Structures are given as C-alpha cells and as structure tokens.
Length: 243
Image (cartoon, rainbow, N blue to C red; front, side, top):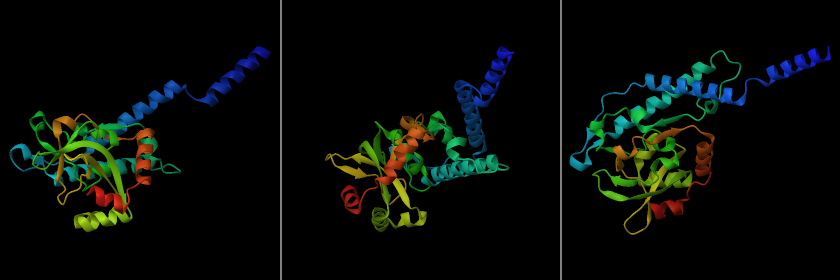
C-alpha cells in the first residue's frame, strides 16, 4: 500500500513538473522555427531595384527599406494572431525566442548580386534591428564602393544627440524615431566616424560579405546588449566629434 502511494505521489510530481528541460527546449525550437518560416513565407518582396554603376552598383535604399518594413509588419501581425484568444498578449521575446534570421533569408537575393552593395539604410529599422556583431570584421564602404574604414562599434542617438543629427540631416525628421543606432568606423586618419550621410545609401557593405550574417537576433544576450547600447547613447559633444 505504501509503495503504491509513493508511486502515485511520484507520478503526480512528474506531471506537475511538466516535460523534461530537453523536451521543452526542443518544443520551443520547433515552435520558433515554425514562426520564422511563417514570417518569411509571408514577405511580399518586390523585384529588386538598383542604383549606381560599376563598383557603385547597389540595391536601392527604398527597396531595402520596403523589405525591412514588411518583415517588421509580418512579425507584429503573427504575434497578434498568436495572442488572439489568449487572456494576455504573448510576449514577442517568447514568440521568437532565440530566433535568428540572416540577411539572405530576409532579402532572398541570387548569386548574381554577390558583388553589389547593400546600403546601411537608416530608413526603416534595418540598423536598429541588426545585432552589433553583424558588422564585426567588415569594411564600411561609400555608395561608390570606396573604402571608408573598418567597422569599430555601434552607437545610439537619442534625445539631444538625435536632435543634433536632425539638424545635420533633416531627412531624419521624417522617421519620427526616438532612438537610432548607427555603425562607427575608423577612417584613414585613425579617427572614429559615424556612418551617417545625407543619403540613406551613403554608406554600404559588400553584399557577399554580409549575406550569411545575422540581421535579426532575438536571443536574450543580444537584447541585453542592445538595451545597454540604448541606455548609453552618445552625447551631443560626442556626436559632433564623430560626424
């Protein structure tokens, strides 16, 4: 009798504990993989458009912005769909837990585009979405393919520093953003410079060098790094030195 009671108690405890951690992890991975597949399958990518000639042949920043905008839109829609009928809205950090999407998965370009340039456009969330490590070890180029310098780090503009950037580039006002993240590179004189020009395609990278890197990383570690970046946004004085 005692043995039967002990067995029953163990069974109850097992049921209350839920599936093993390994099983839960596998289940999470399958769920997130399905969500990622759903988003990518819903993207309405228009035919790729180009600007420039020769070594400066690049994807139009407007086309890049449209793809990024649609991706962000589809993430929001899917999150809303999955939350429908739930007592509380599901957290995006849970829906897309540890999801990673590469540039190639997002833009879906062919090998014929390998030598073209990808604009580091500040138009629609591309730079804010990219993890800091996406550009590590890469060379920042101009819109004509000219070398600007190696990528150093990323920095956030917010409040007074964003207002200063708006004064230097009125086009930023159209975005109505409260915070923007930009890459910093080291120029030929060894000085840090911010990759912010009057045109959205003023700064670029070679597509073949970045296409297999991650453009959207939903892991907790990357999220924490981004929060740290936003918290320690640069001052007006720092912006003036970098611009």
